[in-house]
Image (cartoon, rainbow, N blue to C red):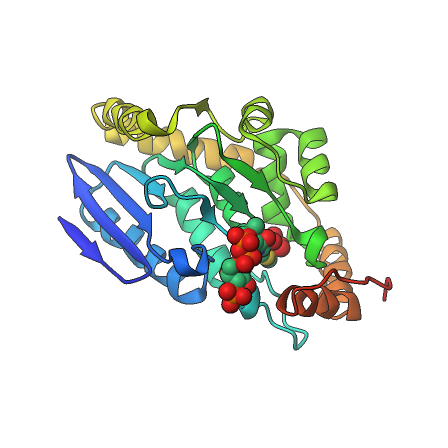
Length: 263
Ligand code: YXS
């Protein structure tokens, strides 16, 4: 069963659902429309008892996804990564989907799309895949749940290196950091990923659902006091209300290097 939502294509075959990004002209930048389509597709997969979800870009893509659509980052003092935002809602749905979500990655992965790749349960990368988490490049104050995704997946020192540099890491480094589970040549990555998905789909869906939910609960089990949470939010507010935040976004739009003034 195939569906074309415009920004994504979806299909279901033998309990395996596929979401294919279909917005190459915008380098699959995660616009709110595209994120809404992904959320709708996951809800539809859930209704159809899809056991394993594969998220991918078109075959041989040079850019898997350019990350959050920068043109949609708010400049009016609203939190760009609030829990009610489409990107955060989509990431939460991936974590709560009652079956493994596998990212099949060819090409470069940026920002919020890198968070999607590491929030997915498994990731298979081609030798040309790269990953960059870019808030520091743009001046965005990432959020606690996003940072926790990276700590859980990569460990503290690798997560810090990626956030502080904002630079892409190559496939070999991504494997070493735990971002991807396997590196597979482009011409074999599709069959490798679907074979893996088929193995999982043949197991007990009830057992896998409860095992995945335990992973989610245990990895998110970080007690934080209301005081600590409010402290984080006040620090973040200072950043997304700063001139530097606006400078980072405007510099991207004007295709120039940002000049951050620490204010
Ligand atoms: O000039 P036109 O209209 O053709 O548009 C250009 C780019 O502006 C556009 N584009 C994007 N539009 C919105 N949001 C984006 N994230 C985005 N990325 C690109 O696509 C058209 C072609 O881009 P161009 O000319 O740069 O292509 P390229 O092949 O030379 O370079 C491809 C990239 C991906 C290396 C380059 O476009 C790039 O560095 N894009 C930004 C990647 C990035 O930093 N993404 C993070 C977005 S912010 C985010 O995800 C979070 C909020 S956070 O920052 O916290 O992680």
